Image 1: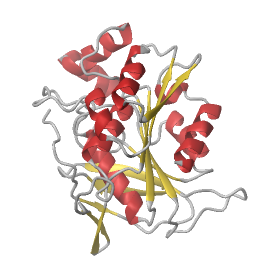
Image 2 (image 1 turned 120 degrees about the horizontal axis):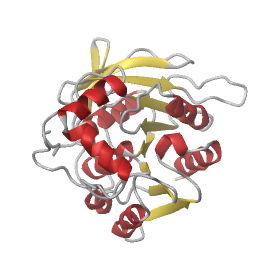
Image 3 (image 1 turned 180 degrees about the vertical axis):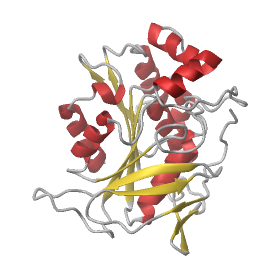
Length: 298
């Protein structure tokens, strides 16, 4: 698995957006096709916002073996869309997307494509919300794709194609929410993580991933090893950062979120959720509402 070092992606095919959910196929910087879904912000009366809405868009990054159409992801969309437009997508190797999963490495290109699509639709503010593997991806994305105004650098726009026209838009996040993410790579301290490593690293495990979980996994090792979540944290500021973790998480114990928060050196909020398990499957509606309120108020 080759690591990502540059915060750029190539192009996407963008359809016209209607008042209901709309699907498209994005193209990551390395050419992998990524399925994506746009849900407009829904007013109290159930009427969606128009295409040119300049408000906030939340981009949701699912966990390993998830997809844009999994029930837990759609449940998050239903809550988030009451406060903002929402873009969901399937990481490479998942759902209807092409390619193979690199378990958090090149997936940062998939997220960048989704963020740039949100901006191409007129959203001036984009918040990324990632769960588990997606939680690690939003942290790396926040470190690699920075706001050119905030960091004092020149504009680093990327092309997004719609029909026969092409526009250049930024692919950075204005705020980042990481839920149930690991702090470091290669963690095997819990039984679920040992099983996950077997799925990812063994031929028999990858067959289980493909036919049991519908996830196509790259057989190559990372080369080089990508920036770890804890190393990415200090590079995200000044973008606001929220770290959410359950105290009953069976995959990553509480030293992971605490390590991430410590790396932020006071620049991140940490929510340790009592009784919560792991990732999007364990995020109940009250928590999702609080996350949405945080995302739309920062």
